[in-house]
Length: 137
Image 1: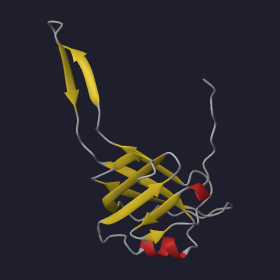
Image 2 (image 1 turned 90 degrees about the vertical axis):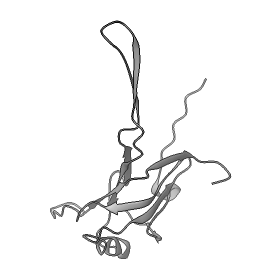
Image 3 (image 1 turned 60 degrees about the horizontal axis):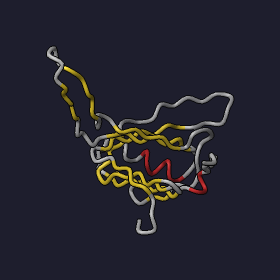
């Protein structure tokens, strides 16, 4: 089977946070996400019996690297400290990552130096979901 290599570009990704389309990004990885504690762990007890521990936690985090000089960043920054639940949708050619109740974790860390300024905005998502992209969604 031949291997394929696809380079994702932010142009190939449709992103919105609280209905705000995100079209301008900071340099580097513009989006990352991870699900926490939704896994299964197999083990054996002292008598050799098999057991399985299953975590059904559907929470996760989404991190966005944004350009702080954009209107979208300023709108997101207005959410800081409000603990407002907002919908987030990130859809690329392979998967759709989304949450209906995401909360801005904190005000982003700020540092200005010699390079182009960026801000990492982190959302906690109690209903983190990842689905394959199909023609239906």
